[in-house]
Image (cartoon, rainbow, N blue to C red; front, side, top):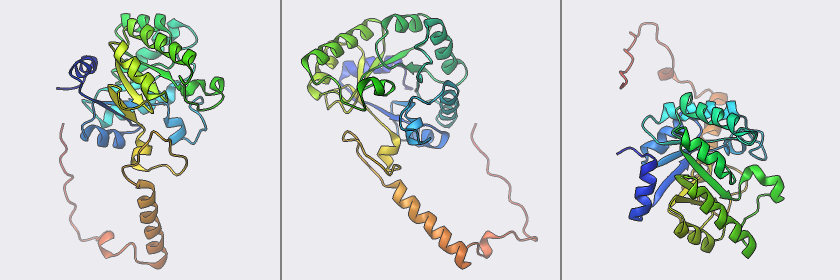
Length: 276
């Protein structure tokens, strides 16, 4: 059965872990979907892992629509959640509804994700048929307000505030809530107190599911690896080795060889048939 918003509630009820991974283009989306994840998050983290920005703040609405549509083409049938970037939903609910609607209408997403706590906006979006995933804790679009990428909920006051936010988003009918970089005990408490499925990233083992950034997972990054991330491969190192081999072969005359060259007498081969 394909994933839907109902899947998140059903998996939470059955205590089945929900698996989410980010993707930003057609090929990584194909990989992620083929691997059997429950949902793909097209995160505004693309600005940091692919575009080289220091934060997610420069990412535009048009950029996110482009990446979301690329993912939708690469992972047909997948459940796709699109991040709404900075200032695409904070400048008035009418604009937020129009911008969120574009992700479903134009880009092929099935839901949007909003950072922070605006229950009234969530209700408005849900009322017009736009499913919403919430996101609290370390919300990267508020990095300057936090004074950096800092874990949240470490004090009793901060923890209580996050619990209140989670409950408010739950009552506003978010189908899921991302908990980023909060203490594991707090994440467990929130998970038990809301009907929405919680998706952790740096929030311990008791969330209803987990989300990981694909670049961290595949080893496609060269810099800092967050404590909550785990590398399952070393694509950057392996790719660098391959590229160096290519450079050496071109300079030494090994590549291209005869089998890589066009033969004027060779008959063209028919293109392979594709499905669909």
